[in-house]
Amino acid sequence: MSKKDIKVPNIGEFKDVEVIEVLIKEGQKIKKNDPLITIESDKSSVEIPSSEEGTVISLNIKIGDKVSEGDKIIEIESEKELKGIEVAESPKNQLSKKVDKKEIRENKETGDILIKDASIKTSASPKVRKFARELGIDINKVSGSERQGRVTESDVKLFVAKKSNKTFKNQNITDQKIEQEYSHSEFGEVEIKDIPRVKKLSSKYLMNSWSKIPHVTNHDEADITELEEFRASLTDIYTGEKKKITPLAFIVKALTVSLKKFPNFNSSIDEIENGKMTVKKYFHVGIAVDTPHGLMVPKLRNADNKNISLISAELKKISQQCRDLKIDKKELFGGSMTITSLGSIGGSFFTPIINYPEVAILGVGKAEKKQVFIDGKFVTRTMLPLSLSYDHRIIDGAEAARFNNELKENLGKNFAYKLAV
Ligand code: CAO
Image 1 (tube, rainbow, N blue to C red):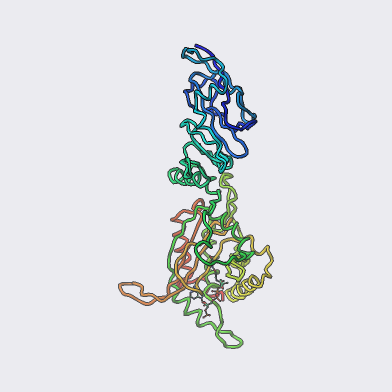
Image 2 (cartoon, rainbow, N blue to C red; image 1 turned 180 degrees about the vertical axis):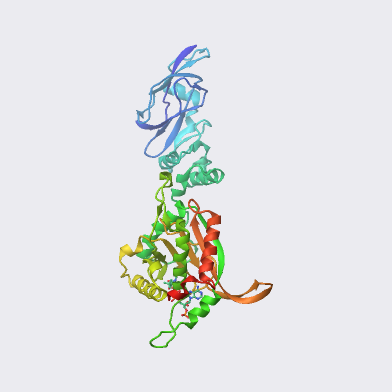
């Protein structure tokens, strides 16, 4: 048994470089070529391997220390008898024993120290090493795609992507920005335009909803044949002219009736860990309005207490205020549940994103006449596509299906709001 010092070898012109990783601890058994520390200069970083095998008795270096050639890294106790080799070798001797001088040189182009020795494995810039460290990735496990196996940031990302496909352990990975490796203009003419302010503002809310809420969407169809006949029959009592009330006003009313039976849909959760949810006693229905500036969601307040004509008038008013950017910001907050209707544009089913902190949203498609099998025969009915997205933490699929049944009932031939026009 003998004690030995392992020192920083000759690493080219690099002096006073920072220790960024200590890869061993006291009491640890190490083999020859096991990595001991990683040092980093402005331009590059390398691992220093052990030139001996033994047990680490003491560490003489910590993260943040500045080291140069000849500085002691560790003291080890070696089990092997030393034959003619000094206990504390001069760095040069140690180096010549470890790596041929020709094999250590600085690459002027990349700034890397190139070391052919297999034990000093990974070549990467300090930025890439730092990036890998922040992701908790052992850079030695990443295969480098560049010359000499140099690891790039893209290599680390690819490694992470492969790893996260297997395990979804590291949630932070989804927050990492993926650097685009090409420019669109490489493939043809492009134009750079400003993203409208409303779209920029709403993007953080959409991202928040999309990433925080476990969404499920139930699709269903409501038979609104009688509702449409009723709607077509509406005339103004003073002028005798046909009233222009869209299906949406009826849907708002039907929704408030349904919400009263299913209060979970009129709730919000701040932190699920708190174990508390806020159940709202008011019925402020959010309406997604398509404007030239982007999507806005004003609230139609106390819709349960308003008749269909008033709801229709308010729908027109608040959607126009949004298009003119004259809506009070406060009117965009404090909703019960949102309706997003593409009925006037087209399409049937879709997957609406819940307007956080609400827990459900109703997507409405374009009503169409269809052949429906009722009481043993096909009949023509007007069917309205419904896409109900809900927060699965609060609402179960069965409850959502029941909610849709209730909504269909309230939009169907026995519709409760007939007297409420
Ligand atoms: N099925 C069939 N026809 C429908 C319909 C439906 N579900 N909904 C509306 N229509 C008809 C209306 O009856 C009206 O017909 P007439 O011109 O013959 O009277 C026509 O479509 C236009 O309706 P509208 O759009 O003026 O009014 P609305 O009350 O249906 O909608 C509003 C108001 C503000 C919701 C709507 O203008 C809008 O902005 N829609 C887009 C919302 C959106 O973009 N959602 C997607 C969000 S996710 O990105």
